Length: 263
Image (cartoon, rainbow, N blue to C red; front, side):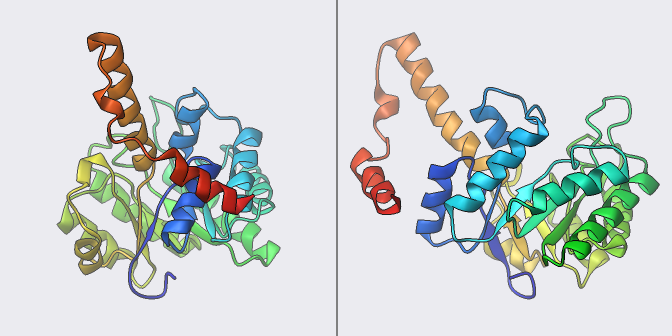
């Protein structure tokens, strides 16, 4: 799927949404760390490793489609520990997984470049040793951590991640078409994933394909769309005592029919 063209990799956050996205005709899915965390009443990054692994396995088993795991930073700092956790993720049956360079620490939001590259390199080795053929995505979080020069940082790191063995490259948060094009060219011929969410929702599949994107994901976008409708309806009931927010609800009969077929 990564060899040519451009495909959308939507992100379900539970079994029901995974089943629906497959029924709708998408050809692959990806988990969303934030979407799942919010469903558990936790912040993004607040789900422990084993709970996340159980969730990833749950999504894999809910669908016949290949699933890419949003595996955050590999749940470890040191490369050897990242490798051990990657092996656990492989055991869930995923077709792909991503490793990011966000430390989760405000003082040093990105791993030092040499360490970040080594984390990708050892994840690659763990996948190769498994002979699973799982696709490894290297993520640079420069935009999400508000790096002062995100394009420079992303170009420098993504090319290094590609050389270290990442199959696909990803810099969530980039929205400028020229910057997207520069990223695509810098890691060619390896494919680039582009995140589409609220900040760049005006970009279409065809526009991103013209810029050279090979894969498009929506991260927590669908989960946030559901949360947006829920928040609006709930607040409207509490504040105004009206129920207009329920007017565009999904039909329970349609969902019953969909899930009855999956029993």
